[in-house]
Image (tube, rainbow, N blue to C red):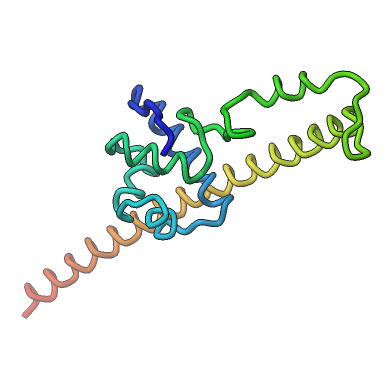
Length: 159
């Protein structure tokens, strides 16, 4: 397991990290149960991670490792966390490997990054919509329960 210092740095950081972990899990097509099992933790612990609640550092590190994310929740490239822009900048010169020039490789990376950004934006939008739907559903269930209790109380009062 990767030795990662995963101390939470505040609510905003926790929430941002939780969202990145959830998006990465969904993008890699893990269910909550499968991700939890593959990381050696309970489903409830995984749900705590995705909701931004504090968990043991070892559990957070296991989740990040499973999803190939660094401690900030960003993808790990080439086995080490590195900024994608630095990698792209390193592709200079006329070197050709396997019939592909650095220029062609750079063009493909930039195209893929643009597609990834679009996908991330779409997933983020869907994630936001899902949160709204979940919140609305919870509110509706609560309202229905309160109305049901009130109707039951009125039925008991009427002769």
